[in-house]
Length: 289
Image (cartoon, rainbow, N blue to C red):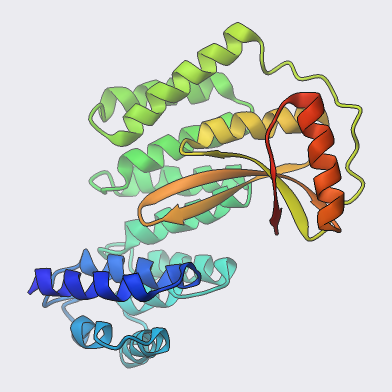
């Protein structure tokens, strides 16, 4: 049965445009759950029947129907949050789930997503608090190593490099076989390289960005490791340029994009990008915010 469900999920996913990515995420999330039981006190969720409907709107309606019939239950709240287009609304629903059902099988996932929301917004103090809460309350969670890694990354982003390095080493010691331990090793090596080469000593640039509220930005980096993205972001900030990190999810893999500036027109962004590339040797591409 599970293989048939997975095959159906794959067939549906192949028909979807990237703009419907969130619904593929929901499918993957549901497939992690037991095939005949999603929650003991909730009505069964007929995943196969919904997946057979090739319409994205049909899938959405199926999820909505489940949420309506099981309103207030842990899975219904989780699905409701997961299907939101507004990240801030989703984060609020995840927080509600953790508050109402701290012992639910979805609580650690919801807490992780809340922390990731804060992190993606650059609210590193709030994000670290959520990551550490997961580490403390859910020591057996599958997200434990990931939470430890990002808690250390919050310190790094806040400029507390020594404490971040200490926590990364602790992560490696406790979860040596985790993929986040491998990321931590790479981050430690990168940090050592920056210290050795003095590449953090960026001098303030003579270039100026006049607009901060425009429609276009320059993407000047994309990394699989968040601390590499943080290094580039901090480099830009030291130059005097506004920069931010945007997280892009592709299944369970994340990419961390570094965006700089906010320009009113694409042409203005292109002109600045060429000057920036000439002065600092960084490639770029113009993206819509």
